Amino acid sequence: MAIGTKALAPTELDSFEDSRLTEELRKAKEELFNLRFQSATGQLEAHGRVRAVKRDIARIYTVMRERELGIRATPAPAPVAEAKPKRSHAKKAEEPTTTETAPEAAAESEETK
Image 1 (cartoon, rainbow, N blue to C red):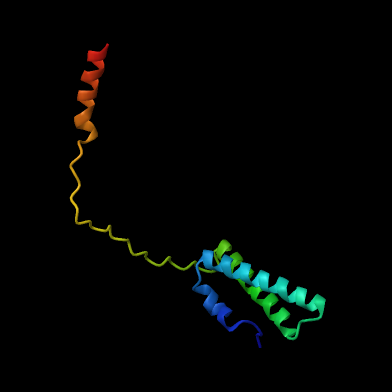
Image 2: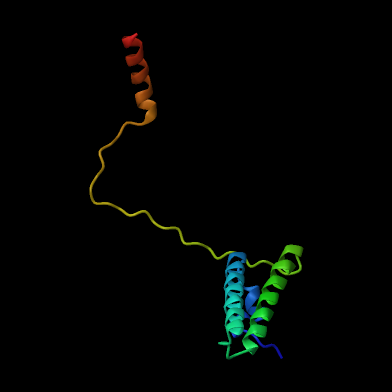
């Protein structure tokens, strides 16, 4: 029987991307630090929570290592919807392109010499 965070079940961890796994690992380590601090000061009420967080950390490390070794498949990244450029109502004045201005700039520099 696994004690731990219900949101971090091994099947749930399979669907997380690597960046999300590292974020969950950071959160779990922070929580473990806080629990140890509470334990040292005598304020900890749920002693089983320390064990559960340690197991969550171990699960995350296991999934990360298995992906490194190719045992577990990394989930395909979700397609990102491209942001459409905003249309403005004001028309911009047409600016000359760089190919049109290059001969004119060359002619001006020759005249100044």
